[in-house]
Image (cartoon, rainbow, N blue to C red):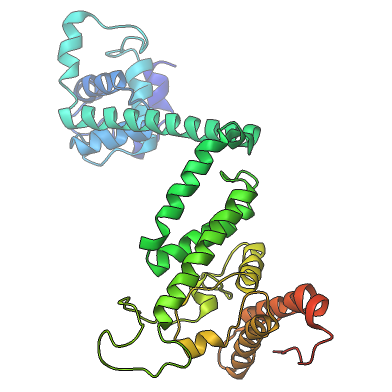
Length: 352
């Protein structure tokens, strides 16, 4: 298509952008040609990109309007196909004498910006490839990646964690406890089940030790306000503003629930069978009884049932999801632990 054919298919309103007043088509192409060819060297070739570049450089159409996608499309046809100031083929290197001149047409800021874009794209590609490779390796290797690690190293790692328990805060100890439960649910867990059980047992012992330190007084010992006159240790205990279940990570509802559901039930099972953190005063801790006993199971059930009953009384709030979860967990405890262990004993099972 020659220049006359390109101009012929333009309407009179479109043609004024290329020829208007004293500004002829030749003058317009002389003005924009070097800029467009220099932009092409920096891989700016799409009509929309060229339009943005010309407008940013304050280079307007013949009638003074801003360049648009369609106008630049016609401009490129005139420039490269119209026979006037025809540019060399883009994939052909220009003479060395013009190469230095055209490079100056783009500002340093433009060149730097496009360099950054290229670097970012390459970085994203590498990151995506690395993530895909790691995902593929995890899927292919699975739990075998840890089976090849010598058991002596795992044992050494376990002993290192156990040695840190005494210096852990209550929250840090709780987090270790929760991580053990989460590892139970992961087939690719780093530690075998027997080592996880040892870690949980060590945490049980630490909670039992802290319970004795926090309680301090014997049952038949009269307390004193004087420092050093009782058997209480120097451990200062601050009671958190939450209950046992909330502290160990048991949550239901729409906001930050414990997920997956199997972890939520595993937490309840661990609270029933294992030591619990001594975060409450002694008279409240006594209500929870010993691990694995009827007192402990009924305490968990009564707490869940109380949650459900209180939620049902809050008619202005939609707590249906929480109520459903509490009632499901109550039924789980009844079926799994109450009926097989304590059904023939006296005492009624709580309900929501």
